[in-house]
Length: 352
Picture 1: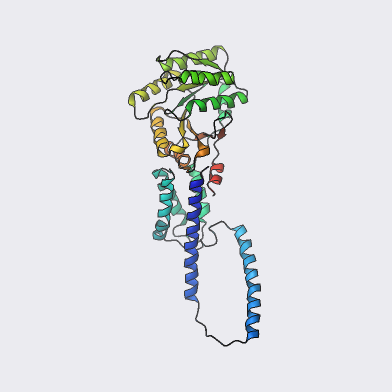
Picture 2: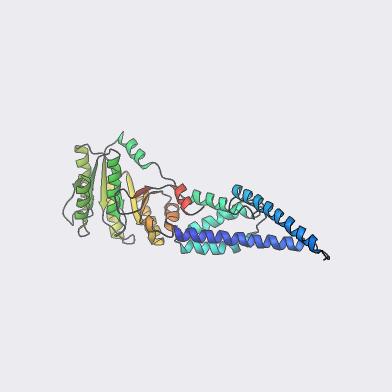
């Protein structure tokens, strides 16, 4: 996961470290005074070589101990960094971020905050600064299960609407959430409100059978908002905790379809509205999440296929662009392949 961005980030860090090491070596060379050569006896040279080796061993040991205490950058970043030098060094990193699906607005945010942290300072740790900035960009979600259980003390059922475009794994993700809820002793029913896509109802019906969950469905072509409404009434009558509404996938630039989704949300008044997008589609998922959020005010997102995402930029960007958290990452096709979002894990996977 995130291997491409992780490796490029590592290369960038090594390059900067190398640049500063070379500059420091050059400064030291210029400052050193010239010395006169003198003739040395064979014995004197031998003693000097032996002494030099002992000194080098000691210096290596001291350096190793210092490395344990200091971050990757700390050894060389003890000097003032000008704005011009920063811009020069950041340029390559900016391209790396953009190539790895990090949204432009997020790249600019990283640059702006990093510049504040290091420019004009003579004692700083660039790696720690970068880690802190990315941590602030990522939004930590509320405890998903706790939020549902707390809500159920006052109102039943808890209603979750799933939305997104076709092909992102929306229905499978809904089934994964159902599995998680059942595992935590919550009863669930499905609303098959995708009444347009061929075989969509049958797909959800298969998940319902496997998970032993009630399914509320109607014929294809009926008003999807009515399916959600009937599922909620069924849940109230049968004392079911959570209703999961599966809506039809729709393109975010189709106004009529987006208006229909808005109607589903208005009629059923869900407690959560979750966008399901693919981690690997980069800026497409970011723009889709933004459009859906502007239309119906998302609660958060779930990103599928995170296990095969080499770049990681979508995960860094979706939350920042929508100002809503990523709730889970899909990491496979099994019901249990759903990982609760944790920004510390994301930062660790990026090698920071």
